[in-house]
Image: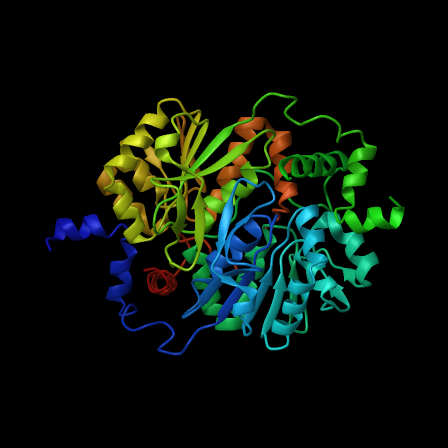
Length: 247
Length: 247
């Protein structure tokens, strides 16, 4: 292969630098199996809740990330416009190192909180997980499965529901750890959760490298992502946009 | 319906507050069609590149977000562990308001840069878009389609490839706009791009509400997401994690 062809075939030029540093030989997990990460999809989930963490956690050495659902096949999001494939049914999976339960709009969250098959499965898998985690209203599903204690976080608009229904204190942080249960705040908070999880699973240096691997150096053009400083009008508009985009 | 049932069925309690403010009547887009947003999937794409922007842009009033590919059906990510469904083939779509081209690992990026069907389609659709956008190495695909001029951004490890192959200046910003082409940096930068796009399409107030809707108030536990401050060792480790998780 000529050098021109090599250039043509290697768009990530830093790969050469990594090779020069002797860091590309062998596998990062040195033959040991990495974490088995299962993400539970269900009808009406919010797209970024599972896909943000999946992107980051899939970079951990030897990790397997499996999208699961009650049944195999396409699972539609809350907007009904996008589908992610469930590669396995929950009946096929009884051991996971990490379980992640994403959130959804009202319809998907309530339906899953009332689904005995999924709640039973969550409880059964939770017995052997290293970490049981949620994003957004996924915390309410963990609550319905009886797994919340003391403190948790969830989507900002579900804070009072969380407190009144499950008797746990809502903490407005990006993620909250109680024992082996870690809940994250709304939607995008799953990415911060994933970095924290990465550090717990593989150490801080690897977590820092995962952050660089996904160039997660956030600079949103606005600073309106926190409900603690948002006006009632902005909260109302946010919830209206959500309600009108969901089915 | 009793009040207890209402509580049970409404986990997003702020919806009541929105109603009290009179903001839930009517549709946000008042009957006018919203933006037609098309996201081009291809074998080996990186999961967060399309799903971050899709999550945010789907909240714009009246928006339709369509996952597209050369052929309909499941499209696998770079890890080969996750699939997103392409709802339409590119042959079915000839008009879009927004085109977004995600990035991929080396294999997926190079294959798409050499796919005449997809490059021709990108060029054809681009003639009528309001915004033509990319995330991560998706910029290289826009470059292969002949759509880059002057300046662009891309994944940090592809910066020198971008400059040497397409003769444009790499700008290490989260997103770079040149005319109607907007390129974003790596993977997670698509979320910042989406907020900027939301403001261009629907105005700043709506964009701020979208940010709150996805609770995008980033607080990563580490500060290692930027290549401009990363050590050579961390860069090498990031690229090694990527290479070993991709197929």
